[in-house]
Image 1 (cartoon, helix red, strand yellow):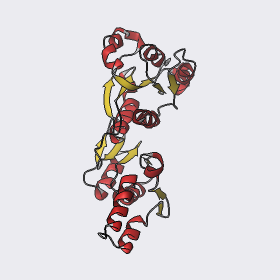
Image 2: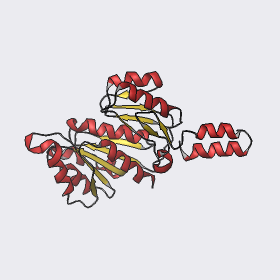
Image 3: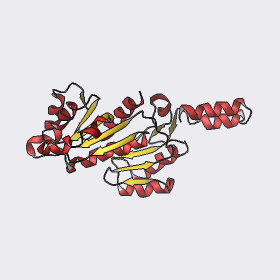
Image 4: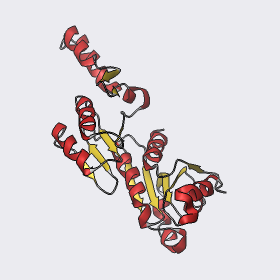
Length: 248
């Protein structure tokens, strides 16, 4: 439940359009709803500016469906991350307008189309193999009310591909960069722009990449002072931080 929704309930009650019982019923699920196996945090949007997100792995199809069903009663967007086509079939029973983004491994339900970001967030991937993590960021950013631009397969092995798009980079208010292997691309991007760069190491690479640890350490040691780093493969987390920055 958002601040605007609570204000609307209070205004309707004040104007006599809503009885105290009806107002209480609407607020009854605040701040959370106990489903037995999950406590759905309906208060999170009010506290943090965006609703609770459902993490798919480890949850059954029925559990995801019931959580979505609980959240669907409120007029905010819904996101399920790291999910499957099987989960999607269950979610469609609760919300026919749900969409499955296969490359991002995410399910979305769009109810609120309001743009809350003040500028554009650019999502950059070093290689095509990094795109699933980048796409997770893109889907999350759009659901959280941002204008998004994306630039894929522009890694340091062919740096001219990135330099050819410097004007697009310069227009971004925040940049997210997903890269595996040695994780060098965020430092390069950081040296080209005057905005925050959120680096996302990916678990892409050969044996010595250690499933993204090499990229993570490289990014943590970036010589570009505007680069900060999230966890391996965490496109979602990068998008949340970028959204908060873009709202300021």
